[in-house]
Length: 498
Image (cartoon, rainbow, N blue to C red; front, top):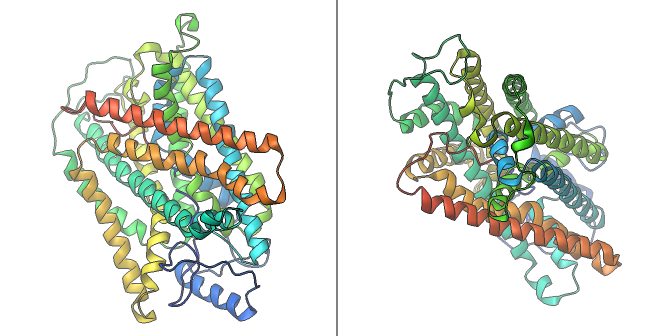
């Protein structure tokens, strides 16, 4: 959820353009390709501008002396950017794919997602070196990629590439933030309503009598002040503390879930090795969203003290994430079989040990909100403050942050079945950002320099796979919207979203 992340193409986390500056996706005017190296004074001004946003000077690629986040901090953010509420729905996704086809498909999805992230980083570094720029975000990388193509039409419309990426980023990340608010309210409401029936006896299937409390929308408003305080944090290094706390809380909850499901795994011989194509489409849509963290990749790479180590950190982080996904998804399906529910937490006994899983996940998602919010904020805010004098920059910055967090809360309250609506939108934006655009970007970047036919075929196949993800995810969302438009089937209805 996370997306998320992705959550969510790569935005530049340090750019505050001046009134005449045209850096990053924030500028309203079209960027022009400047092949001349910028003067030193211009680089100094860029660093000076970036200090305002995060309290630290921006760092050039390969710089080891400027301040930035460490390799460990980068790994923490990367893992947190992927692991969200989506992992709790993976056991059901395995049911939709089959006990053999599901894990294999999830492994393949993790490998392809990691490969697309590496493609994006490599293309961004290519244009940084070619244009002598300290960093590029996802949108600018796509724009320069279109400018590098031999097609005159694509060159003339290259700025649309940046705008499309920025739009997808804002929609995806703001959508995840809305879903997180619904998730927080639903889970806290469940814990509160079951508190009178919760015991220390963790026998499975114990009868639960819920005590009705206030409407879940009031729970959403309860979280709003805490979220407002979190989004006022503008320094990525400070957010590392919250990402670490979120990772710890989710790791502990996943350990509790794992120790329960491995205690009584029945004979898996009755489980199908592969499901039919209709249910497999549901698996595909869930898996695409689970690996959505492409939106935080370039920002993390831009903020590293030594960006040369980022490819290794990226591979390590995605390996950890994929291993967790396959383990939880497979073990959960093995344990509960056809009785697995939309969230594995709904299969747990109603005792304090397993109620703590929901509490820990509430803490984890609460901390994750700030990281997911960081991406759209750094697209919208730098452009807005470039339109006013320096005197009003900070008040406008804080005002926009508060307005955006209030907007996510209002949408979470007003829109019915928000999870499925966002799943429909995310099917387009997430698949485009994570699987469709990166391989096409590689072709645009390196085609004029000569590419192997096998590489072109590989990139084309990945983009086709992403398009299939878009179609299947859209089918999944529409199908569930039609079937459940009259009533909510379960209160934890947001668990399909990263």
